[in-house]
Amino acid sequence: MKKIIVFLSVISLLTSCNNDDSEMISIDNPEITLHIPSEFPEVNSFVSLNKPTKYGVELGEKLFSEKRFSADNTISCSSCHIQSNAFADHNPQAIGIEGRIGLRNAPSLQNLMFMKFYNWDGSKLQLETQPLVPIITHEEMDSSILEVIEKIKDDPAYKDLFQKTFGDESITPERIYKSIAQFEYTLISANSKYDKVKRNEGESFTTSEAKGYETFQQKCASCHGTELFTDQSFRNIGFPVNTNTNEAGRGRVTGLASDYMGFRVPTLRNIEYTAPYGSFGQFSTLKSVLDYFDNGVLEADNLDPVFKNNGNKIPLTEEEKSNLISFMKTLTDNHFLGN
Amino acid sequence: MQNFKKYLLFSVAMLAFVSCSSDDDNPVANNVTLEFNNTFKNTTIVLGNAASTSATANTSAAGQVHHFSELKYVISNIRLIKDNGDEVPYNINDLDKGATVIDQAKTASLSYVLSNIPSATYKQIKFGLGIKPEQNTLDQVRFPNFYAAAGANDTEMMWEWGSGYRFTKVEGFYDTDNKAMSIHTGSTVEGTEGAYTQGVNAYRDITLNLSTNAIVGSKAPKIKIAADFDKLLSGKINTITLSTGTGMNDNATPNVHTAAQMVKFVDNLGGNGSSDISGMFSVTAVEN
Image: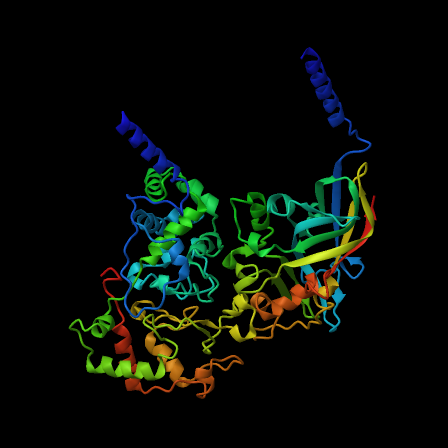
């Protein structure tokens, strides 16, 4: 009898702790141990409020490929964020339902937990606030979060995963945002040839790659710095301008003239597979980007000093370009790309 | 004990009478109607397309003729101030019940009825042009009705990319060759009040003294509010010259309205919160 009482009180104790998502501790849904690569920058502080869990990540991955997110059930997150392209796609600008063309190029999704800003203009600082944007945007999924929940709420697979992740079957907007972010936090790319060379794992650069790395350090690393290969700054580097009247780059977020047509320095990791390049896919190849830098970029009042102080260009010989491309290809992480 | 019961019964009966005693002649509360009149100076605006001959034309301080085809703005956070200074907030934390989109194309939207306002004499009204940052999150679960109204296809008062509402949306034409003007305002702030980490707060708090006190009680007063869109380009804060293009200083289309240029329009329409707390708004009459 005593044993039964103890058992019952333990049960009721557990039950009473089960209400709050953030407080929930479940031995059946353990936190995932993520391998944080050494030398990577600090983790975004919001991650500590939504640590990836076993079922949270599984649920997030399923939601990431859920086409019922879109008004006509044709587009999911993974339609424009394709793993074999480092979760970018092939189109200059993202294409949503009914072939609608978005404002910008779909960015790759990698190493997001180390990023301080999300999107080309850094409009979001917390990854959990991002998934709503494509869901409601006319040129993307053109739906609403309640419409999405209505479509998936009776799906037994989701009921099961929400139960396992959050302790009950209820599907809420916050739970959807959190689980998608948890999945995205697990997208860590740090296993390229470059990483293996750095870690002395028996690989070494070819002559061309090594020369390219040298040029990279001299002429590129001031922006594409850190192990993320972006310093996460926003710069106007005089790329051909998107004339869509809704485009102002980071300026539309901050209201600062100095941010007009400034965009986040993109990471170079897996760059071999994320063409086309630029905020609206202005360049189809890496060579064309390097040629553009070499020939000279567009003048602007707030053109980045790297260009402004150097005759609006980064001079590169043909050999340097070819070596740089060889080096950039060492940033390809085949395991990450699912190959 | 028997007596006590009788007293109790009597008291209850009295209470019932008391609670019923506020008859129609002296109600504890009544409606207040806010009636918006969108004007260029003293002329009510008529909307029209580029070639329209009936649309109301206005000329800015900088000499640019212009007219509108679309004119919308959001009002929220409404508070009425009694003559003793007490503030009566009207569903200020509930966008479904306390916020509305004023749309010049929809006559019904120009009158907004505040219901159940406590009987009293009121001397001032405060409201927000736009939505406070903490409520500006496109939260469809908390405020489904406002979300639906603002997001409707014929309204388009959402900034999807910023996960917030548009505060004003003005479409129209300027100069004699009728170039498009498209002025959208909204907030992009991140973080919490007092510690915004980035972005622009385009919400503006408006304070207007009533031309005569509004007496809520046996009658339901109407407060007539003029919104003078002449101020858009020829404001108390900024005199603006429109220009078209994709340069940093071009301002006639949303590319830079959403950036540095936007704040100039916001300050003209809603004041700057310090030297100007009325912007384009004024109370023209109170009907008691």
